Length: 376
Length: 256
Image: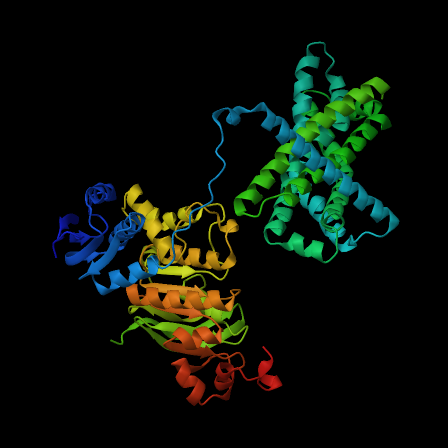
């Protein structure tokens, strides 16, 4: 069956009525004249009635329906009566269904003035709001922790144990890889410089002090921010989207005590342990590289031992506790304040990782400065 | 014109070793409004998932217009799927897109309409389900009943030959669910589609169904097939009569 291009014509039948003659095949793949043409034609007539005639209509699909619906709405707007003549039964019925409910007009949105788009006030306001949100979160967390101390909190030990496992042993593989490599990188970096003075043996000091104070804990924290912080945000965000957090609240349980506290405590426990593990592997990694550069393992261990002071270890461990709290706060805060759509959950996970890393770097710098001043 | 559109042949469904339903054999005829009914946990939704190709049968096959779905190539399966419209239990709308975006997606992927035509068609599809003017709303901004209707608008975007519904009126008030039923009938009559519904809402079943199958929990197979009004009055199976007459069964039958 050959197809005719679709078309329409507006004829005047008598004084009061105009006829819209439809012809051709109104189907996908056939270019048809725009509705705008009909709209302009309609403006030109004075008839009080529009009759749609389908006697010359061929095949049809949604294109025709969309066109007729627009015509119908236009007629309603212009107070022209709309009548069908010789239209296929299906078309008439669909048109009835489609026009049964009047078009919803969304409430007008307040118009933004042009200068409002770069209003610095809104930036300040945004910053203020996020600060208030953070403070509220930290305050609620503090209350939850206090209730935990008093033994009144609805925190379940079994949850805590599960999260410990997820944040600890589950992370061993990735932590092992990164810390060995970071130890090796530190050793290479130092060895090349120290060789110029013939002081290769001090590579051991560099690696030990570097890992203990700085790199071990920082690498572990960054890995955990990407791994566990994002997971927390995604879990809590999905729970928010599923109304699970609402359910927890209405059971009279504080989401802080039930969801955030076990996650945070798990990280606070897991981070120092992971840091110890990362330190050990980093020092071993440094040893491997030093061996290749002519520092025998015995020399490396002997020199390393002199550098291995409790204070260096403590600096790293104190940092690890702080970082654990920060990662958990960033992750849980983004998750709990997440929106209720799939896109919002993704956004929460992204925000969790980004804020966690920013927090980590700032906190690291601050702690270093404080310890420098104190002289540890 | 009675012509089978979908044929279930010797279908056995199982999750691993756990058999859900076995030896299902029935036809869904063209332009039927076909209801799959049964008590909770009998495998209604599982059967629907098999028909949609989301789950593979343990045994047997499903034929669409006499073509096997599970023996077809991936490409043929995709072609078959394009002729289906599906609304899921909780809508299945993409929450990150507006209603217009949701309806637009299948149109954009599978048709050659121009962008302005698509816009007109989206307006028309939304008008069909009574949501004219709601193009720019997100699924989270509208009510549950509207979400179901929006999902229906997306399902009919490509003028499907078969419309699948998983619990269309679950969670709707009686008026909304009645309106939705009417809408389904009107659409079915106008576009001549075959409708397959999973439901246990008796008003829907008696109001719009033309044919049905009853899946039994205890015997793990179908025990009745036919017009639900007929089944209510004349079924040989007491369980089916009880289900349709909404009588409470004996305790043994209530266990699922």
